[in-house]
Length: 190
Picture 1 (cartoon, rainbow, N blue to C red):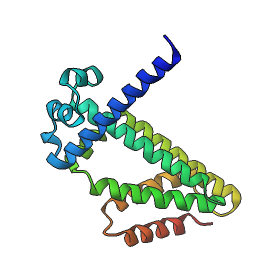
Picture 2 (picture 1 turned 90 degrees about the vertical axis):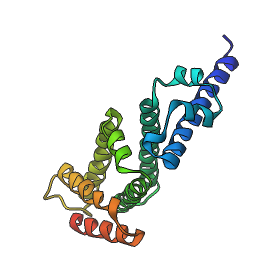
Picture 3 (picture 1 turned 135 degrees about the vertical axis):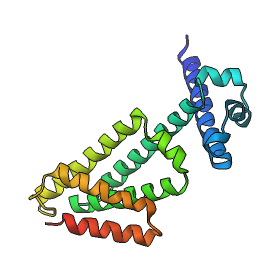
């Protein structure tokens, strides 16, 4: 098959997949988790149900794919902010702040049933490992640079950061998130 043909087919498949994931997310926001059906998703995307079933076997698989895409975008964002900051201490601070805001926004826009369903998936476990590794590397780098403490292992401090940042999900404001990050950073400094 010609390359142009393959590229066109791949682009079409990605477009259908993305439209399906976007439609499912919109329907969850409108009707809640229980109000999302394959029929509604097909209608919202403008494709037939038979075509939808070629891409996904059920609503849960669509929601899991949507969540996996979201988590990947969040991790990409954290990597991006890390790569555009200055010294090791600054890199850690921007990642902590960005993650805290992601955690707060994610919880504000999703109901607890949806969060519980999506966070049981394998991709969430892998994303958590990647996030922990990112934090651990930043903390170790800051320790080598002299900016962060070295009397506690970097992996333990990464766990401390992630558990403390869980509080950002219920923070009352962006200012509260900022104060939380300030307290976490104070506990990490040399």
